[in-house]
Amino acid sequence: MPLTVTGTQPARATIEANRATEPDLQTDTITIPVKLCNLPPFNGIAAQVLALTSDADIDLKELSLLIEGDPAFAAEILFLANSSLFGFPSRMHVLRHAIAILGLDRVKTIAVTVAMRGFLGNRNSLVHQCWRHSAACALVCDELSALWDFSGERAYTAGIMHDIGRLGLLKSYPKESAQVLGGDYQEAGDVLKAERNALNVDHGRAGAWLIDYWALPATLGEVCERHHDAPRTKDPPLLRLVRAACRIADAIGFPAVKCRRQPSYPEAVSVLAPKLRKAIPPEEDLRAIVTARLAAFER
Image 1 (cartoon, rainbow, N blue to C red):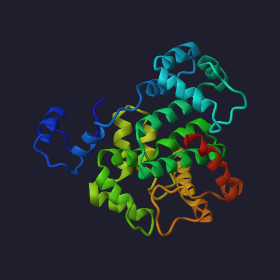
Image 2 (cartoon, one colour):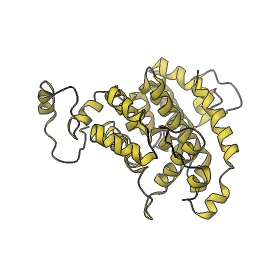
Image 3 (cartoon, rainbow, N blue to C red):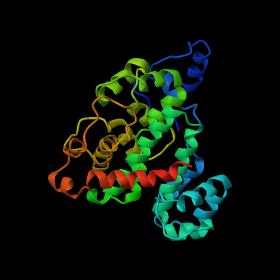
Image 4 (tube, one colour):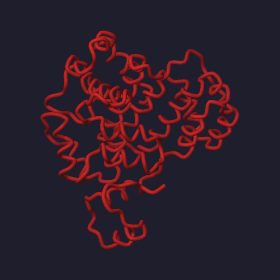
């Protein structure tokens, strides 16, 4: 699937020809998407799981056979299914049994988590910090999803993917991204400005490019691109949820970038409607829930 980019986009062959004479870093809206798309692809099994589970008539046996086609992926599915991350009370040793017990939505959530872990590869401290923020945001989305009338699985998937652009830039431009992420900032908006100054793109736009290239649902691309935007009355509910969860993850101690002024918990939830603010768990309770579930990632 061709990557949609703002502005005029030359044919891929032309891009590849130009790359031979480029400097090491070309920061524009043509070469950055090309470099991002040279990253390891989003796991093909996970992408197929996302597609299959959108079909209400999906055969569980078909889904099992798909996942079993990649034994390492299947093993990771079972590992996370049995971890404290998802809190299922009994041990599951057979993939088909796990799929039958967990259900399609939960299997989709676990598949996306496994794919994201694989995409990260070997983690340095900055990658690990960004990953913890993404995972914390996903877990907050899961905890708060009922307030927006979403399934926890759908909310979790959007949360764990919302910063994929930041992770992609770290892998594509490690030196430049490390300098940005290690900078001294007053608040989150300053980080976005630093990204644009260093790379001519921020992680939101980069994430939308990756979602489009991987042919993942367009709603995820919108979440990636707009989760730092100022709220608008016509914003889709899923975007509102992830935007709030991102700020809450920062407030409870899991920021992707440390700023001198992180939002407090009351500030993070203040943008929500009063009836939602009243229903959100106390700060210490939510922090404890997220911390405990994050332990499943740290093996």
